Image 1: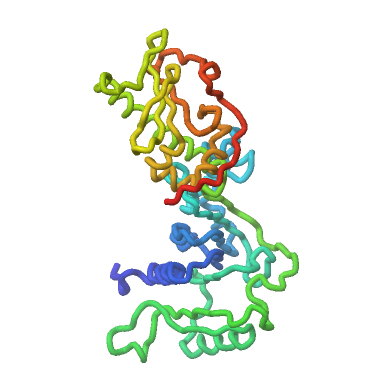
Image 2: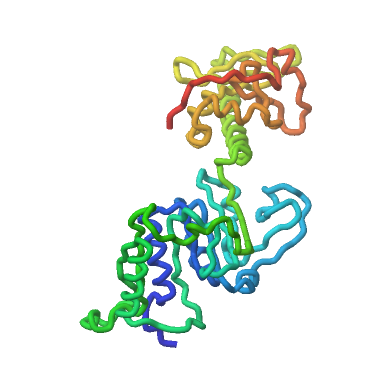
Length: 369
């Protein structure tokens, strides 16, 4: 089949909105007549958007690609798409988080929702949106306007509700006929003049009516959630600490005679403590069959850990109660066992002057990226 417009008009309409969002950076966006949710599926990758909503009169179309399954784990990291403790969403609209969103979450926040409803009704939940789009064309659209008819309608809307409009479009006419034919798809971009001007916008003066029906809702994982941030921090911290420990033990094996700070205890186990010294080199201290890696050293050597934690005191606050982390009494270092995997780990941290849990006093020491 011959395609007159490349990309297709459908794709060009989506590109227009995506580019507009990129330039204007709205936080809350609602798409009226979202249909198959193609535009929403592209907008969800825009990091500035925090709330993305689609509304369509055809609830069957919205529900067509969504099914529900019972789940009982209650673990949001395993049940990726969920709304409560009883049901799990399965979304074929392409709006649900990807596996990468859970493995590598960011500080961005995003909630995506789909509602069944009509634009002829006002819903109080839609007050205060930054951008309202209506760009999808359905196969059963009832009429088409000429340029004059469209502009006359748009200017009347501006006069009644306090907007200004910019006329543009997609689907260029053949060269030399732009003025006579115009765009294949006409687009009006409305900008509100004054928030307090007489005349309601979409959702204003809706009282407390909620006529729309929620069909789908998903919240993306975000590092703004302390539980998610703690999980990522602990994983990164243990990885960096084990790496530093391994590097130090390898140097210890190769240059045992030169590293005069390492001693053997009565059982013959080797031990050491890595910390940040004035000479900017890792050093070692005696500690029964364990290696202690200072938090300050970890933040200095691990840019990602420093970026995620933002400060040493915040890092301590987030990891202090995690069962995977063992720390010294001052909560200035992480304790790692030197034994090989499969060996029994000694439970002598308390005897050696280190404890697994204690209250952490806040410090105002900041690490800058």
